[in-house]
Length: 125
Image (cartoon, rainbow, N blue to C red; front, side, top):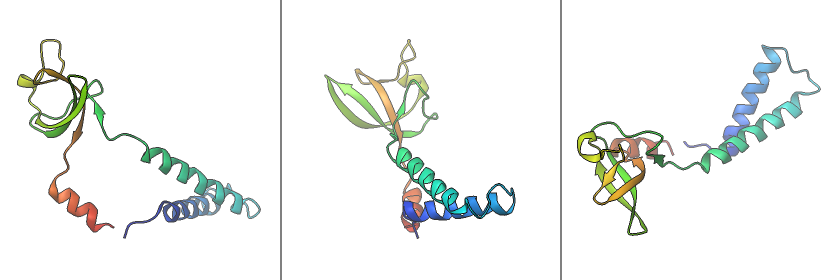
């Protein structure tokens, strides 16, 4: 069963604050509630930040593994296009080490999840 952000934040805050109180002896009874609330807020802010991150990987950051099938983002005559591509260093990179798709330069890529990964993720819900 998939948790909501609020449920995950509550579990995180409860476990973290309990550990800090019982094991580290950092938290006393008077500050337990405020520490718990702060931990929940921190967790939710982190989850919100992560949800806004792009899953696309800039080609300047790294390239896919040899033979990996990926979606690529290219600009084709000024229009952004997404295509499927199998990365092959010998045929995809030009002399300037730029990733070329047809006549276009690849800007970013995204791994194509396997069917097994999709099933596994759907079963967690």
